[in-house]
Length: 169
Image (cartoon, rainbow, N blue to C red; front, side, top):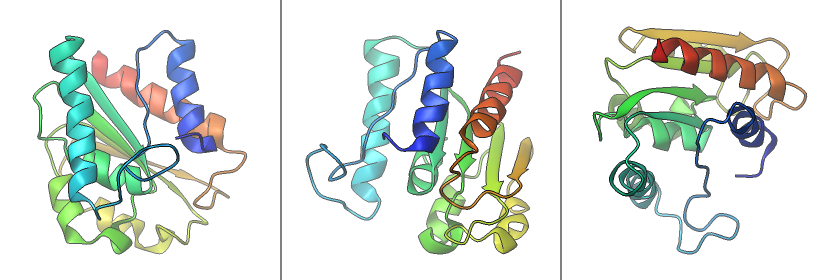
């Protein structure tokens, strides 16, 4: 939750007075519970969506996830009609398996951000995975960035914000 990628995106939204939520999955940081290899983590995201839509009455939800959070967060795209799209930063398709790729398929707008030096979510496999998805979709390759995007936080935040604003209009 407090890594450079998530903090950069979160802070850029807050600076524009756009409401957002970030959280650690169960068993990460100060979050209670234990890692469940996906099922419980999907429930965590759904609980956030329910809170935002049912308690706070948000009409539009945009999901942005990084690495494992991209696979889990983007996989609930069909959970609510109020989810207007998503951004996946370094989606680890090769690590997570086909289930999350299938769950994250949708007709909603999608942005995929990938570093060309990423070896955790291997860059050389990016286009194969990206081509699986239906339109509308976009991608942005961050040249020189590995999986941890040190020094590229502003570039990522700008791409995410531009995409978010484009799907609102």
